[in-house]
Length: 441
Image (cartoon, rainbow, N blue to C red; front, side):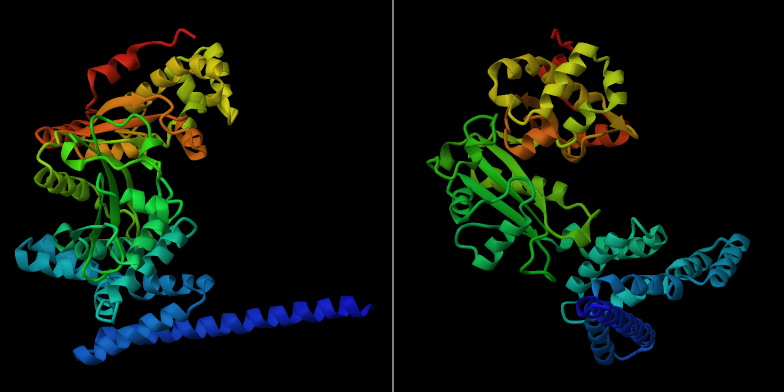
């Protein structure tokens, strides 16, 4: 046997040994965690409980990423509601459905892990630690659906702790500490910030950036929105992202265009702050700049390209063979640079986009996630813009199209109620007419 092959065998044995040692260490760590968690639940003293909570958090953070599953499995198996206790409380309530028995039933069905999480929140930076734990948990749930009940408890508590009453709105500008500006680089999910010059332009006099913060996470934005102050609606994203453009006079603007909204904390997924953010920013801007009359977005249509290539969607839309063949031009990354090809696609794409936004639904709600967000907040689809985003991402997701959703303060609540109660999609006459116009290509 060659020395090289023998060396590889020993390396393999050593690697396996390290894996075994790591697994044993991980198992010991989470078994210790279980005992600590039980002690934490039983501890009556606040100071001792805080110290224990800190130790639980530190030990959890010491776990290697591939060893977090046993921790959440432990929360499921050892800290769920007791079935017998729930059944007895339910029987008692059925026999005598009075407030006292209802309270007993409510206490019985609450999993002990909810109280455990409340106590973990007593640790220094406990809230941040729990948000980080949920980020790990959400990564595991798709492959381990049995953990959904554990996630439901995390989400229930985080919704309470991060309700609107605790959120603080702050404007971010060029004087904001660099540590926070760097977070914008990290979390910008719609239009990546290229460099500090780009960042500076986005914070100039004719721009605004607002973010929600929570007192427990003072250096971590939860969500932020970028706004351009303009004269009229924006029909293309490129001028808004041009870092060499000359700043305008905000006092002369009549339109505030929300061109990027980014959520920042993966551990808070499913807990929406966007509707509160937009409504409060509209209020803040209206007070600062009374000449503003229009509040709108310039938004992507991220589900459009996927929908256009779906056979069922094509059949439902009544596309002809020729039109389907025409859509195949979208596979060419440079189709938008060819004036002839672009013009041949224009009417078909605008019509398809209007149909997609108005008619493509799942469970009586629009398929497009951005449409669901803005329509649910009370906005109206105002205009579809041709070749408004020709970046690689814009072409790949939205076929280069972007949408202006308009927020009219006097109609926001009416639109919201109609959408929530009846699934109504508010849209301008122009967009509705566009959806009725069949491509002639």
